[in-house]
Image 1 (cartoon, chains in turn purple, blue):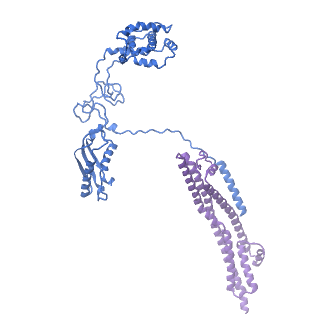
Image 2 (cartoon, rainbow over the protein chains, first blue to last red):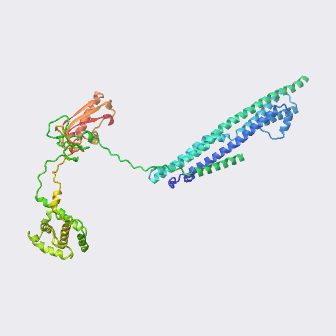
Length: 238
Length: 356
């Protein structure tokens, strides 16, 4: 460890800076590079996923409001895996069907069950949208600190080495400090995109969830009207 | 997720490779080699406290030296005087007339420094065993009359007798050397300086000297005529037309106590001064001590302590403390004796708040 930062004072390229660094600093740098890789993986994943979800919502809304029979729509959607509004619609329809097949008594109970089923599906969908955004937030807030930790350790080591070398010319001090600062640089490099991506994706997820909630409310209203219409004649017959 | 992870990893690998390749070692700064600038601290006293004047002249507002006679001006001269060259020494009185007897001395020195000539080199070749430095010592010894004191077995007239006997002996060694034509008087004096055991070498040198004298056609009288006969005089070149007034003949730098000397004096008093801590208003009191000292640093009479500011009790306590401290710390040490004029009657100021 005494040789750290003093062995090759002339070479200050990135690679040599990394290789000169001490064990802890190297570990921090590698960890931060890993965090950066993970951040960008999430960013790419979320970008693809959010685009897909948005397209699905658009397509579903178009189909739903096209005047097509809900029964027919349910039949086409029920035998394939759905997400987003489709999943909410299917869960609501399944509950509706189950209740009517067995002959529901109370319209209020049926309404509540359908709402419950839609809420569960909605929260599940929102959860998948917001998955892994937490790690973005963690990287965004902790990255600079981890980098700073690497820097502090690196500077400590380099100062110890300087004390050992018993000379204080800038040429001796500089490489150790440059190497230590590299850790902070990598930390910021990982943290800045993470923070930006977190803000963007959490806002996007909020918007999509709100859209799905809106649909769920609307569908709930439609179903409620249907329940009233279907149960009214039955009650009138009694 | 897998695909995006791979995408991200590939992206990072690309960026890192690019960074390692293109962000190599940054260019070193172009630093021009600049040498450290030496800074010398010049006390302002040299300019503010210089004075020039005449000790005997009456006192005047401004001290000025004796008026100079020559009208021409010399650039940048600082010391008053009639010289062409600005010297720091005071003007010297007219020198005594030169002793004519001593005029022989220059002749000898001129003789003793022969100009290098082919004949001499020939001789040196022949006498190779002789160290090179020897002629020089011998030459230096020649003009000094002290050498005559050396025990000489022969009587006073011996050199004159020896002379003829010596010359043939010298001639016998080098074959082709021409007969020396030196003045007998010089050689006689040179003979007295030598010791018997070095006779041989001496003889050789004499022939050498004689040969060189002959070759260069040296005339001591001509050299004597060229010698500067102006009377020695010191003094500077600054012309002065004002009437002489009191001051020193020499340009002097003032002899006030320097800051460090004053601090040393103050320190000696402070060391013996025990200020009671926590005294009210002691911080506002200023003490001024006026005292007379003799050359050994002892007090002459009583020190006068003046205290200003602060409360009455604090003033009184501190003033008596200062007086006690002064009496305890005499004799003062470390005062420069050559500046006694400036500390024979000295005023020391104290700020007790800095000593609490």
